[in-house]
Image (cartoon, rainbow, N blue to C red; front, side, top):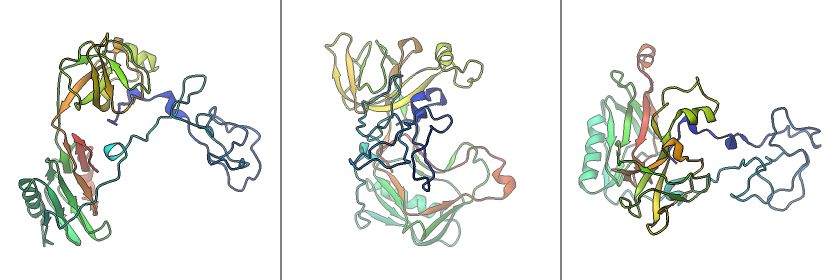
Length: 323
């Protein structure tokens, strides 16, 4: 999922299992303070075994839980079975012998050697950029912005990359995978949508195609802020459109009234027409890229570390089906 702003935090996410002291062999007399979602009585395990005395379950996760379950207040646990590479598919095996681009163990700055091997992989239409065993110092920045390129080391305990640049690193990354995508115009919702809904009604679907990547979001309107009890608290994103979800269009029904689109993964939060809820087509994403098999360090002198804000070791931006 695209990571939502704090504005999209849901009370439904507040329910969680509560641990107990394993030495306590009897059921607790009362729910722990503040745990309105817990069930006082021990519940059977999901595999049908006898109840385990002293074990607590979330009231939202009973023995017969399904993604459709919700309590009387409409709270539910989100179904994250869609998460991960290609919505939960196994990661592909990479054969380093197939279009492999080895990086030598450089004595000194390895930036040019690594970026050069990445460029070779790009020119070949993709491949594995293989980092060697040992310590590599990178005094600059690295970028992968083409699909099918994999940066891989010999193992996190064998290949160690030290990023050392200190100037101008605020709000940026030492290794950037991808690039900012392009977003199309708003395609407004014609009807409000509720959590766990796959199909959205739009005012117009003529500019959409099956397979399109879309962002789904809304304006952090005064009504939105008030509904969340955050009037006078939220500020930076107020009155701006913010993305809540990244999805793929898998079906379009232009004959429906209003027309509809079906998403690959259901939404997880209410979307309201009054908040300007809409879709935006997203283009320019790269895919089938990965970073694996090495450890990184961004340790720099103390004063330099505090001179910049939000310095990232590795950033994925505009990437789908990467790892």
